[in-house]
Length: 82
Image (cartoon, rainbow, N blue to C red; front, side, top):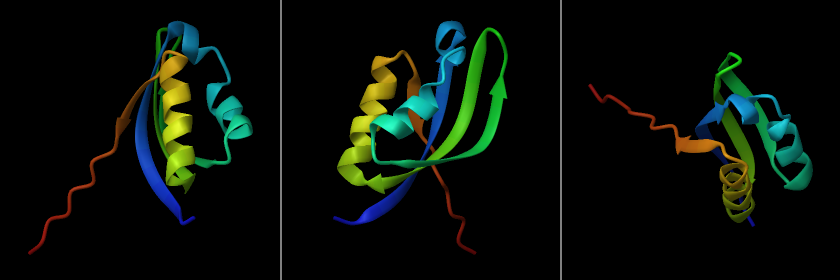
């Protein structure tokens, strides 16, 4: 199967922000992660992350994160042609 890259915004509530969920996701699923940007406080965490792996495995990893209370939104990349 083909390896692909996808980018997501992850929003963590206070409880989830205290857990090593990205590390656990990478151990549980065959995905590589790259954190592009992050802002984490005691109340909330917002992280821009890239995931690399097979499409179905990325879907499973995203579903797992959502099950752990993380809001997952795909990053929309707009290209301006000129």
